Image 1: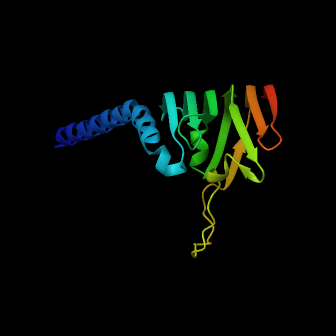
Image 2 (image 1 turned 90 degrees about the vertical axis):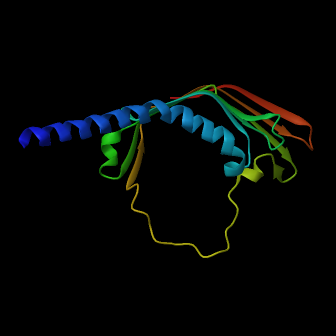
Image 3 (image 1 turned 180 degrees about the vertical axis):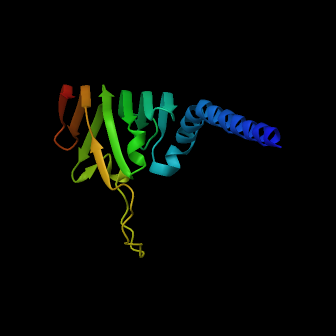
Length: 174
């Protein structure tokens, strides 16, 4: 009897471990595919990702080359060559969000202004006039971000009415 219970338990644990490994292997391509296919309906802009790696065991997310296009789906609005986040999974148990490392390499942003209109106005949240639930969420209790690194950034600002462009290169923060 004990042997049968042990055998069934071993089969269940093995199946759960196999499912976890399969999930770990397929989460990155599934997430990348979902983001690229549904970005237009989620944020109103086309997004392209070269490589996305999510490690559910270590809490890391790394993106190589992410592009967000202008509303016309042709011109690049923003991009990042490398984006890395290391989330402390143990802190989630206490409903705390702690990021031990946030690294952004070569962020790029184009800001266009025409009078009081900017090229990112469509990204701003729309005001919702319907009644919403005002009760506070219990997650997260706190948000902590340590070790922030931004390097090689570029910002291009153009005032289209004045026909003036300002380029800021090699922006960095540590």
